Length: 347
Image (cartoon, rainbow, N blue to C red; front, top):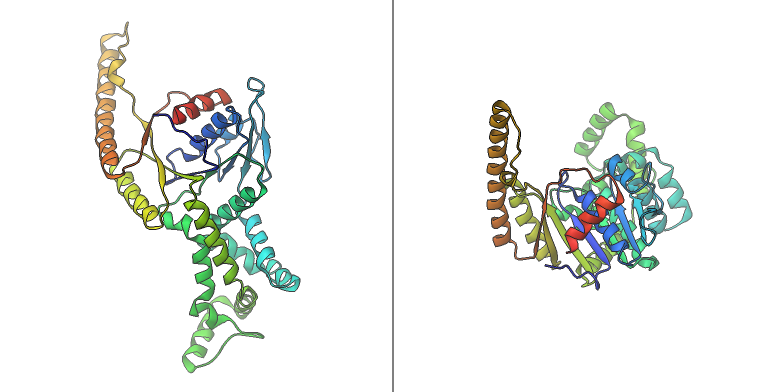
């Protein structure tokens, strides 16, 4: 079944880690870039081999043109997400004054919070996407989303961060000029925290949380913008996974989450399926080698049958077009290999 992407501008490649999302995102980018579309691939953490296949020693945070001598018509650029950098840009956008921005960005504890705060990476990915969409420089934007076990991590990261800033726990810490000490129990808790973390840490925590106050509305507005973008018919959400019981259960929940958020799932991609190993009949093997090969052949055939069973379960439970991609015997080592894989996705 051909996949018509003419009316799609944003293609989000989602799913758990380790299923080949980044490679498929790059392959789709190459295929679309060779079809005349000005294409951008925003990736999260590409393997060195993939970077080399695209002609880079390393991916860069800024947008970089992908060039291939054998395909001079290729219109493809790529960018690697720098979540820390883009979270700083969020602070710059939502700060109510230059003084507030300066105080937050210069606080050492803020940097630690960005690195460890749940949702910050997903939020940065969506912030970068909104920036690219508003630029109108690209016909197709492919987003290799951060690996996640829960679709809500990606879809609701901005809302979660806004809720985090609204919690009573944070307000317990926030007060101009120092920490809140209302009751005897609070005082005892603060003394215990001071003995463990030190008073300087708590002072810095109170300062950075106090400086973040008032920015919740900005995070919520970006959440609404992201959800509106995902629900737009010009966006396509693609779930990449593998044919196994664990991935099946994850994918069913993922699909339910998308449905609850009124986001359509465009395609389900089952990646790295085992090929029909039984069709391969080597000649000239000695008896011992032939016995070994037959046992290996039996193992892979059993694995293929199990995958086939789960593929049928996927098709029955998730009523969207399915793309089946067999495991490749060779690495994605150049643009040509990526093009063939991308064409397999579309055709």
